[in-house]
Amino acid sequence: MNIEEDVILIAGPTASGKSALAIKLALQCDAVIVNADSMQIYDGLRIITARPSLSEEAQCEHCMFGTVSPDQAYSVARWLEDAKANLDEILSSGRKVIFVGGTGMYFSAMLDGLSPMPAIEPAIRDKWRAIYDGGSEGDLHEALIKLDPVMAEKLKPLDRQRITRALEVMESTGKSLAEWQNKAAHSALLGDVPTRKLVILPERSLLHERINGRFLAMVEAGAVEEVAALLEMNLAENLPVMKAIGVRQLSAYLRDEISLEEAATLAQAASRQYAKRQYTWFRNQFSSDWQEVSPDGDLK
Image (cartoon, rainbow, N blue to C red; front, side, top):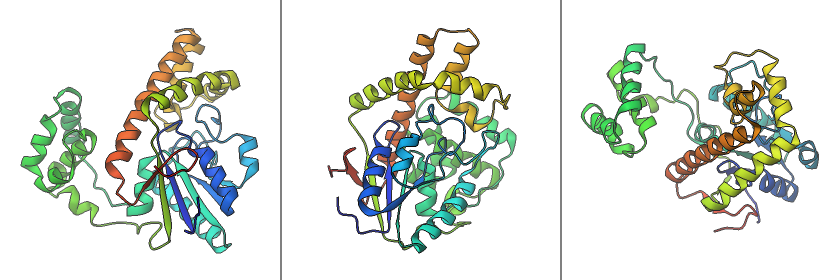
């Protein structure tokens, strides 16, 4: 693949082959790989979050992998600031930048910027979250049509998480979420920088096979010991790192609540569900200027 742009974005669901493609392209065009995955940013969970291995990192320069302490809650806004600092430094050195990851919000922040979001009254949030948890598929979208037809037009009926957010904002502030989104607090990270946008979306059956095999390989590589070391830190359960797929399941195994085989089965299922959400997000949110490629980088 001939890359002329200064920045390359590689997105896709977990286990789709993003890291391997990033390394291949980095070696080809002298680029630095910058992490765009919200879990691989944390130190201490190289195996369970499928961070590039030490041998992979040795092949080309990697940035923002394992740079945040597990006891911190790292936000999209902080990632955007750190990504900008790395982007500016790398481009000024004359090299290209490859952002790679599966966190859709990071790519949205890069391309569209972040909007200032209002505080939501707890009672209002609880009300709509209860409807989200117990309502039928159409309930939320029908409510949004009545309260905020502008956002109802923008959002698909099955996009229940975003619809819930729009309802919370409208009832709490009296303003459409669209109005808040127009007041960008940060300009888009990439701006006019020439950018190639690539997304890997393998066949689901192949992706599920890769996910299942990868978690077993993680266990063989020391994922259990990695989670045990994390638990020894006595971190708060609500920290993001504690929600990494595999942590809860292997924690249950370490407490003798389930077998290792059961833990692996549960983690594989959770990873497949996460991949399904990622797959849907990338399909629905990415515009036509994203190119779908195979894990080898071939255009589809």
